[in-house]
Image 1 (spheres, rainbow, N blue to C red):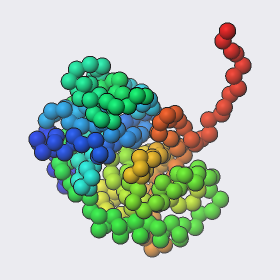
Image 2 (tube, one colour; image 1 turned 180 degrees about the horizontal axis):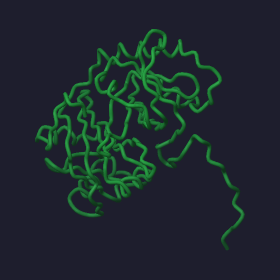
Image 3 (cartoon, rainbow, N blue to C red; image 1 turned 180 degrees about the vertical axis):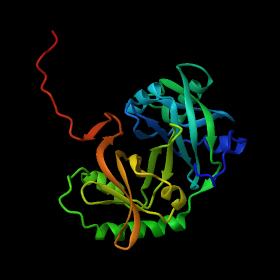
Image 4 (spheres, helix red, strand yellow; image 1 turned 30 degrees about the vertical axis):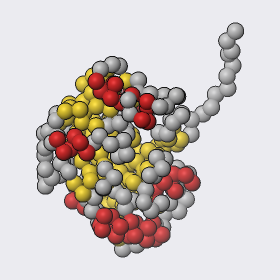
Length: 286
């Protein structure tokens, strides 16, 4: 969080109440064994007390492995009213019974689902958060227009086609949500909304500095994660190197060179790029 932002060490009753609805966006940023950031959609993320958070696991994915190896996480919760809370929390434990377990499995999404329910609850201690923020929609819309124009002027040719058609669509469609994460000096990931971002060439993501400009300008070149999702709950996770800032078509933009693409969506999350070699089955059971 920037020095200009509030640093709250507990949630208010109003915050806790705002996190309860099923229809909200919950993101969790984790750190992989190589020290690189990763962003995951966690729709069950909520505050279970003023100083603790929980979320329920009902699908598999790499973030569950990462958090067990490195407890430092960053989070973002966004309501349908475009109010946002961001912060960091430390993973402490899991459980498969108790009040939070019962709470999740009594929600309509899981209670009436014949195929899956929450099987594990993850507990986290709140470190700090920004407090309630409103998305700066005016600056985001201006940035989205500038990002589209900058992408049209992007002159780099012959790039490796890292971003396939689906990924480009997720990055470029107006109204889709986009977020950037980096690992800060304290080892915790930090999430910044970059709804103004756009794809450029075959392997780049660019974003003007119109919204969250102070935080973005403070970024240093290095590893970055990127996440894009539609309101239809389609999503894609990227990772690469943040290269810094340059002017593209007269617009000052940050630029990420993408070298890894991941499909987080069920039923089978998995790596998209670099392509994973498919090995033939040579041994069969009786």
